[in-house]
Length: 313
Image 1 (cartoon, rainbow, N blue to C red):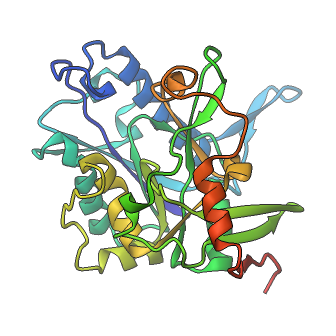
Image 2: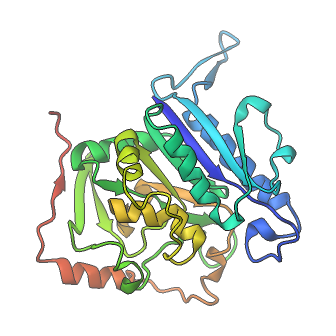
């Protein structure tokens, strides 16, 4: 399988510090980007080995899960850290632009469209997101095989820390319903369920489909690219960063995330503790289900829940 990853990357130490890409010390951003890039090659590339101690040699491993992958990092106006990370020149391709930094995600969309027909999966990530799941494309293929390409499964973003009120928190809980109401109808096929490895997993339409990333198969990418609004640079969903990552796909597909009880089925780490550190401070810690999800389940309980069938055809 051939997979294309595009990453929007920007760093300006004179930017004022509102985002991680605008802070004076580049070390944290450098670690985040290096970890993001390394994970892609380590998890999904073909160069994976096992040390055979008895034979004193390294032998190939995970070849049934190794893919041909390309990584294209989109930057703008020379504000980046690519020259400061310890990766070989052939590790990635650099696509430099002259757009406003907040619009880099749209440049990634243009790159993806220019590569139509060449890959099996077309992916986008913000530069501080780290994948840890080598089976993510197996899971995505399973989901779309049984539910159709009109549905898009998004990972839950999370942060971790040994300090603070909790060690792990998912950071993209429900927004107020009106924020996405004009872009999606979450009452359409509100919930899907499927059984995998003898466990039932619930997938929920969500008031917050944003994950800072997306992973589209070739048919989905072609479908989105054919829409008249593709690459229109509409920034009306929260802001430019969120719109570039989420608005176009939200308008094209029914978007799901694993429900809170199954959140880890598909997840991606957000580097740092920006949101996690809010728990116990600005955000109180409650030992109960998120109110927004309770309301959704109550309102939609009369609807029939289509099941994700896992039987072989």
